[in-house]
Length: 246
Image (cartoon, rainbow, N blue to C red; front, side, top):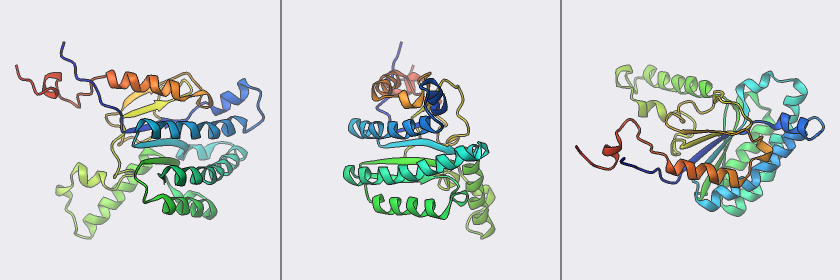
């Protein structure tokens, strides 16, 4: 059998699920699971940097999460603000770019301001990018790109017949980063929940029963080992990938 192994992933995306179940399992007060989940991000970011991952994108708050109880949403917004404050010194120390994707119009002016400040302070770093998705949905991302392409057509800068996938993709979030290689979901559910729908078109999918606060670097490394053993053909045959013809 012809084999073609995958290289080290450049871009990993994680749906950080299971915080509430973690809190219930450990008898934590309301919000305790989200606090544990916030604290779990730091060592994983540094581990990704150490092993050479170029970009890590994490799903912190989805477009649909606005439907949760108001007290939980308020707590999550407070924790997101604290996350930005906590991450910025680490990003400056390790020279990691901190970025945010999502519908900022739904956020408070204060949170938008500290997000923008963090982005500006770290924009010149190229060692790695940490992307936090807040008020984000893949469908929102695609519709937003459609609006921008439609505007170009209205202004005469582009004709409808001339639109290519690349033209469209340039208007999506993370257009300057590699496509997602690995999509990981913790917490035991088997769906991608409207996360990076376009960017994950050829991502290798990984699902684990581990709740997000319990997800550690060792399990991530196991997934990366599996990833590197998979054959990623992108529509081609194994022989084509190896430059063989029969």
